[in-house]
Length: 172
Image 1: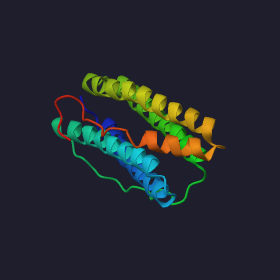
Image 2 (image 1 turned 30 degrees about the horizontal axis):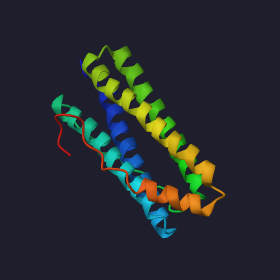
Image 3 (image 1 turned 30 degrees about the vertical axis):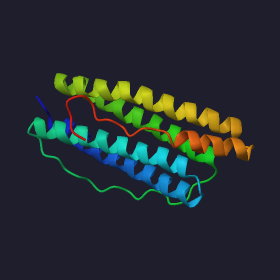
Image 4 (image 1 turned 45 degrees about the horizontal axis):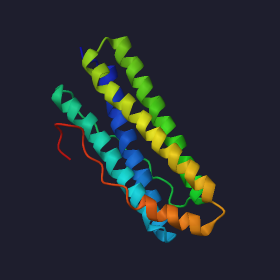
């Protein structure tokens, strides 16, 4: 049974995913203002990926006949620190999202909701990728943080990030 408690938690997660998107869009704008278009692009692709994550939960709620409640989304910061600090924040944020997903999974187990457990397994796997990606970029940024030509090369490399693709069988 799809309990009200679990429905409320998924609606909260929809807001958390949209906040993530909003945060990455703010980081994209910040990097644009710092003349780092490749990093701005990387963050824009991250923004698009988070929207896909939110909509996957949104569609799931609709598929189960549950009410979708779009909760308020906090405004993200507009200013950030160094490139290293921004990517440290990205990694910390992804770790927080991982914790939220794990809490949802625990709730789904407690509620005996097997369809939600199945859905959340996709997110658990996805968060491993998210943390790995953020960690790899952060490690590389740290290597070049004191070498401006290296930072510009990183910027060019991050510009090549492809657009995210929705999970199989889902529209963008």
